[in-house]
Length: 136
Image (cartoon, rainbow, N blue to C red; front, side, top):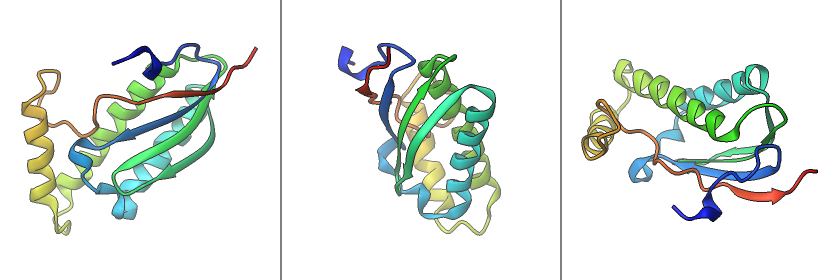
């Protein structure tokens, strides 16, 4: 990954985009979107994340964020880890999910190809942060 896709300083304002593996359109269901929103609220309250704007698309999330105290790389890592586990658990337990078997197969297949995963991979590993404003 090139230098342009990294958080250079953590107090600057960044646009961040991250997507599900294979661009699986998970966020067409409200329950999965709520996990993202609840996780953002948690990071705002407990991890000093500042969220200026957010947009949940069918297969990816856009954020405009910064932090005064935290480390954006760590916050994003934790956010993605938590949301992946919570959404996968919801998919596994939701027998009414019509695409359940297909989605779990896609995430398991991606996880098997990545030695950093135990079983599933939900998110693509990159974040693509783009610095929007440098704070002094």
